Image 1 (cartoon, chains in turn red, purple):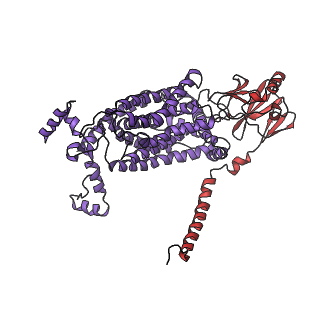
Image 2 (cartoon, each protein chain N blue to C red):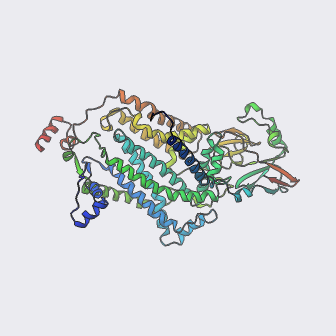
Image 3 (cartoon, rainbow over the protein chains, first blue to last red):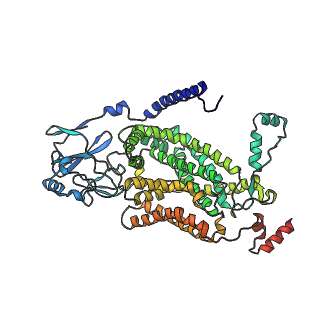
Length: 169
Length: 420
């Protein structure tokens, strides 16, 4: 039997390895996927917040999917400050209009994009937020201005159900 | 090596040993020839074994009372501290035991660095040691999460978020690690499972570590091979057993001091506040044994590069046997390396210090310089030093400096011939 001739046995080996690999993959995948968010975690997808008592210049923090969400009712000065920033100055350029549909209301995930700490309100060099963990400064639009965080704080999906209620998620 | 043809004295022993040669193994371990010049820095292997067993035993007993649930974990730890008989003692031994474990492992690692124990033919022992060290860090980190205090929660958040630096798949990996959209109950239960598993993985690796050690035998303070086992070595038992035992007693005094007099000094007060996902503590710092790597992470202004630098700082150690080009093992005969060694020790201590300080101003500058030097030491200084350094003459045998005790080579040799 010549060495380079494909035999029936070679075919059987290859077929066995292939079926075996599929079997191992099909067994391992459930073991890995069980760690992903389960149905009960996914079910808590949205939350409604009453914002009627929030006065301009103040922020409330609510919990959505286990994460804090900042809702800030901004003053006129803060809105004009957020709008006046030039795009060239930003590490992650985003217009304030794109971040706050209604400029008076800024709704964003209160999670530092560096390593996930909760930034502090009304702190930092840009009149916005400051993350105490590794020193990231955010402006009044939640955009990263200084420090190790790579991107602006995330804006979740949200909408006004009525004038007093915001639905997040 | 030791006597492979061991025959048990008793008839039952012989019958048993023919079927499972455990007695041959025991005889190998007791007779194992050990260089007779080992100093006290060599006792930390035994001390580390003690630490591992202490952690496993106290951990098992704590697990009988701890409840791995986000709503109950914090209270169950307080329950252990207040209600469980001797719960306070067991928990303080376990918590301080982690610190003692790292104290011993750092001495063990730096002993290896000083005497060149990682060099041929001991590379595999060294690499197994690095894997054990990585697993120790994983176990310590997950264990710190279990009390579900503020530092537990935010430490877990920060460390798991390191994976989000990976391009494209990072966010998916973090969600998978969490089992949700933030650190929460699913994260706690899986951390408990892994924290329970890892010590047994370490135990298995320790067996391999010792097995790999028993193939070439111990390195020693002069860093040369054993010439004549009958002259250069002593049997492990009783000589090393007694020496290790004495060192272990000294170590246990330090251990007991922390457990009984300052059980919380190595922890953070914030961890006695229950986890709150809405408030990050003002100053997050890891446990002291992770501070140098934390300083390296923070000294890089870019997220992904910071994570890479931190991981490289540990993984670079695995390449050390090939980065150090010098044929001479022991720093005793390497006058230049000896100086760089102590600079590295100082550098790591400085990194640890700035890791505990806020990452700004002068601290940040110092952290950057120290980080640069750390990598410079391994990637530039060590490879060049092997070629450039003029080393001192090494002794002919382990016995020579032991018996000679004088720098006079001729005298030492004549002493040897008298002995002969």
